[in-house]
Length: 540
Image (tube, rainbow, N blue to C red; front, side, top):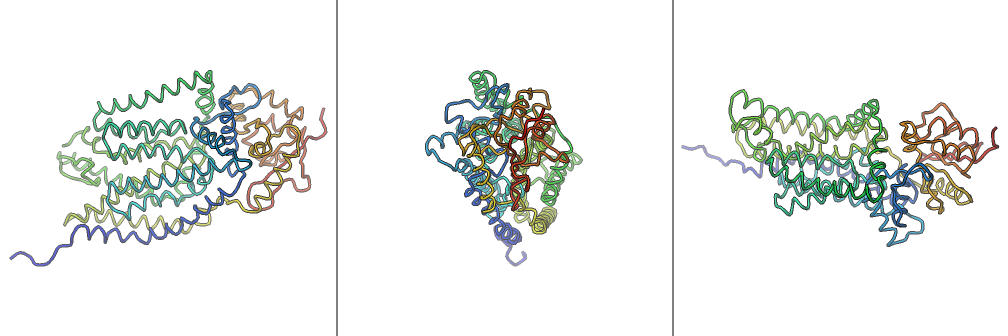
């Protein structure tokens, strides 16, 4: 007689296996209040939180007045348009429409916040379409949200989140549709991403490589259709700016690499995310077994759409092995290779935002595949063991976040003390009748004064021999600036100064003196230090 009893339905097993993740999901949901609070405080604060925000606001002002942001740098103002024009263009449009009287940072910060919301929605859609598992689909955006780097960059008036959003729109279209219209819309999204941030290449490259592996003819056609508008727009911008677009976005951005900085950044990534990195590594090793085992047995390999990355019996050969790579594995690998960009001088933790997304998508989609196949097959001990291991690593990740919570959410949120300090600086700038040199140019903009100098980029270009600093040093020696505002004590030589060359520092020390000699800086509270300097007695 056949065995009696009922066999558990696959969807019931999937639900029970997914339920194990509920404590991790709940804990991450509880932590969401921290980035939300930071975003709220950032929207309320009318001054700079990041060193680049004011320069991007200035670019929006220039564009709203019909002035190019890609100007020759041989004469004042000494400014570089480091990014492509879409983000400052959108903010210029809001300036023209709403004409704000004081809070010039609101539009750009709102764009970043809305882009983050869009990224979360797209991550949920991508995971759900590949797993049909709501719980794991929620996990992916939460893993991205509860990171040091998203927490730090979420409230900033910066290009990064908008560029990533455009990229993920293209990724979603490539992943979910193979129609001609879908490919055209994906190309449009990738063009928008690249002309928001010219280094936003991981997703377009991943999609091109994936399509080449699937069907090289259609892949080459897609690459050609993508390159055509990118190259055409690039040529037009070079022509309209008389070559300055190339200088600003390519030549002046080609900074030297500092591999000590790369090491420090990777250490930072591992510090908060070692468990997720181990989980991704385990999945890769498991997928490698799906290549090695069939080769040893000279059998066949399942296509990626039917496999979770484990060994199966299905055609062998290098081409079929490569075709087995799904889009999210390719994205994960390409994003990992892009980490070399962390060595570029001037790179910061914003370079880690996209790798966080790639890891989250890769891990959660694979996790969902393991659950589905473990639940649908009676004998799948290997997959079940893999699932248990991955769940254990997710719990370790949550414990690691909990242990490091004081530094995970360390970046300072602006408060009343910061508002008071910034108001003192703004008043000092408004009282001047002449030019003001400020590392935070939002004060110049709010006081109706021209932004004249970008300290970090111009100093870097001077060190690399791409810009002659002599006229600017002469301006300092001739005390052109009524006030100089810095975030370091330039009178203290026992520091590393990335924003000024030795020649600039020597001139500032000789021809300027502290505005508050008894306090040195507006240093009350935890936020930004402001050092103010005024012309001193002229030295011979």
